[in-house]
Image 1 (tube, rainbow, N blue to C red):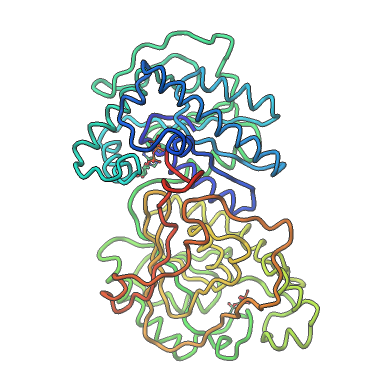
Image 2 (image 1 turned 90 degrees about the vertical axis):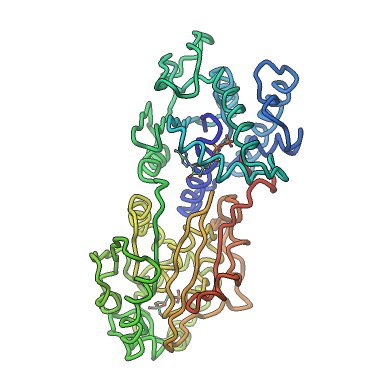
Length: 486
Ligand code: ATP
Ligand code: F6P
């Protein structure tokens, strides 16, 4: 990462790492700010970041080198993967060091710079995110935080050199001032390096020498994400006739209670959304379009939102499967994420087919997805950073709406239950189930990863008759090593 403070580098780092981990790529964020807090201390004022403060400059370099060394150790242990080195990396000399060290360790480098000229947005980032950082623990006076952080930014600005080595100063008048670029480190030509510059939250993107598959996935992902406030809702279809019989798959209609849920849904959604516009995405199966029928919004069907294909087992109950395909039944319990039904799909297959849905979801504003148990588990796992061992056992109850709310580095999910009876189709993880195969990965080290993503009660739940629980990717990042903001 490259960028002045409060430019969303940590936000982008964790978002990319969640996305890649969900797709099955080993991914880890190395946050230099966290090393600094551990080694030098958290509550340091802006003078620590002054480039003329030689002692502090050495200490900062020391922290950067330690994080880099840990990153190479991680690469050695993983053999492959993506490490995100989250720091300001704001000078050419720092970036040259990174490129040189990576070359020595046979690691490819791609710089991702977040450039933002919108001072109001930067101020909002300071107010909303930096103020709660451990750097300002116990400081009540918001003006003091704002002044100190702005001065920190000014110190970085004094020496900041945009990625690309072209010497341009893309600053408008009145923005944080920068001196002219001095042509230093001429032997290091940044035009030869892979980089992406995300300018003003993506209103413009510059890409240079993006060649590998993963680089292009990351670039495409970063083109699609935005930070506008919006609401995303998920719901399973109303209870279906197959659910009543505990049968898998098929294309059944809603049960009488399922129809009641469909009738009750519009009023809950309008309460939660107000007058805002919404688009409904359903699968191509009858039970989801029947559930969406009464919702007065634009609708779109996605084949990718169809339920996990149970192949030969489609239409059977779990008991039938155990009786007719005992080996398969046992194999599924052994590793549910990887298990592929004969003639059907695995959870991994579903994750991969959902990738375009996730990408579009990142790009869009208010969306409600009405889909199925397995599919919603996969989508939920993306947002809540849940790994493949837990993913296939997540509880996504019928007749419940989930609403996502974005936080500084992740998101919260609130669950709203509509009080209409429905069967449970959740089959708990059998006690004997082993841990997944070696190919199963833990999730990215996103703040508050799977462990914190379990449902918890909340005061808000008591205030709202529909709301039953919330889960979160808890943006508590600063306190834990390697998961904190710079
Ligand atoms: P620091 O260098 O102090 O660690 P940072 O650049 O890592 O700062 P973050 O901590 O990630 O900044 O800031 C988070 C805030 O940035 C969030 O409020 C998020 O909405 C916002 N943000 C996300 N992307 C961008 C972007 N491209 N430009 C500006 N702000 C962004
Ligand atoms: O039982 C409802 C259902 O949506 C089935 O159609 C589907 O096969 C199943 O849930 C997926 O859940 P699991 O992976 O836990 O069997």
